[in-house]
Image (cartoon, rainbow, N blue to C red):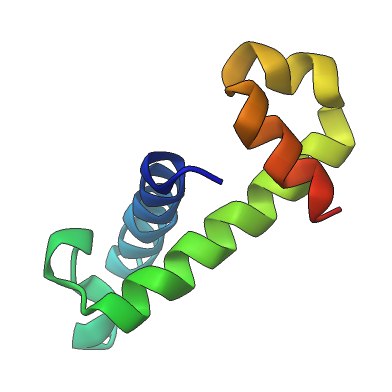
Length: 82
């Protein structure tokens, strides 16, 4: 999967995580750290979660819908991992 897409997916995962953490009564400070301040290891975790969600989406909506949203290389990369 292209680095730009992995980055976008990882950032989306982190953004949603921070929103969830802000809704908690007493969130851990580390749960509130935005993407731009994360270390590389935590960014990679979020990228992998984003990729996994994209693979599951591919399985649910099918390849034709993905081809509208993603490049052919990205679709191929996701399908290889299913």
